[in-house]
Length: 225
Ligand code: DC
Image (cartoon, rainbow, N blue to C red; front, side, top):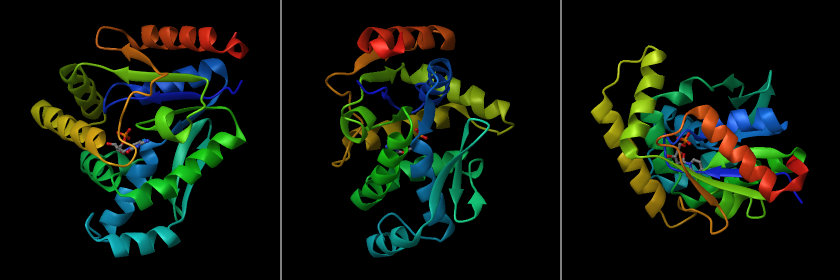
């Protein structure tokens, strides 16, 4: 049985925090696929390319150099020769990432990269379509969610701790519009895979969620025992 863990869910459900900890505890590599969509959105935005300029997008996608490397166990996103891991975290890039993510050519380009990474080492991979599309045979699939207000509060805390000046209502409307876009696109929408376990984190602490997921992983795949 493979040791792949797929974690999907809407924005702000805590996927990356949780996936990182699960990976650490089980000795797996954490792959954040949202960062790849963010990197593409960042690249296109910097070049002044809009989401509706399909020909320019396709031609740039052929040349774009996007690499995922690990430094002290932390995923780094390298675009060309630049480490853009910090720059892609801005709220405007979250929004642009969700918009560029509807484009089939963008998804295909990243799908190959995501599957290649999973071939190298067992992974905990998080995103929107990991259980349904990227790793359909993952032995463990989780759909992580939380109430939209809770998700907005968590994101608010995270951004203000980084010193960004943000407004909670703006964050909530940004999360809602991203959910809407991510769930309603034609190609690989955000969906709970039929064999995924739903975990609602609204009333749980990070440690509790990690424990719940590790228990599910052990129940589903004896190699995690
Ligand atoms: O997980 P995140 O917030 O970093 O993701 C940013 C956007 O990228 C998200 O709104 C939708 C898109 N995305 C996607 O379409 N498929 C994935 N597997 C991961 C992210």
